[in-house]
Length: 178
Ligand SMILES: [Zn+2]
Image (cartoon, rainbow, N blue to C red; front, side):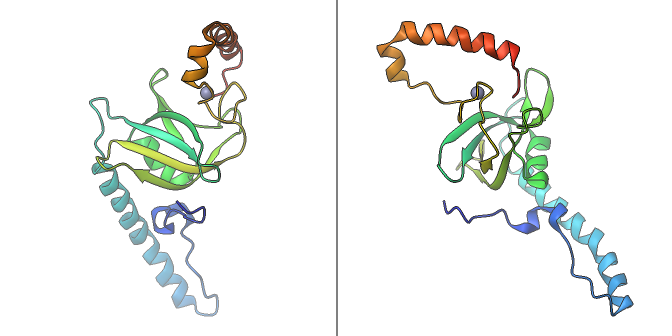
């Protein structure tokens, strides 16, 4: 996956900015008349994409955020249609919170957004990757990634991990910044 990959601009209606020639007023009319049609076309393309995803019984699919520069897996959450559509239009990784039954954009409280450059679907279209550049640590604990616990280390030093897990749980209750 090349770092230079970007979502096609066609997918982002918000980025659509037709070049306007001020010298010819008729061109202005033509451009403004074409814009809604183009946006409708783009919305229909996004809807076709959303229809092609194998959402589970609750309308969700796994959504994984990956760092475009380091390849690190940053976090995993779930997306529904609205979360994926918002990620496509805003280019900020957006998920569906199962506990709060609402959309949430990673970074909306911590300001550590994940700026999405490309979105990948897996072969059977039930898992999504948001490939992007994080503005800061992704985990609410302050770690770069949520995946900082190697199972092999845990098996070697279970007591240490249990103690730290208790600390992390307490920290999470105080600083819920996801
Ligand atoms: Zn985390």
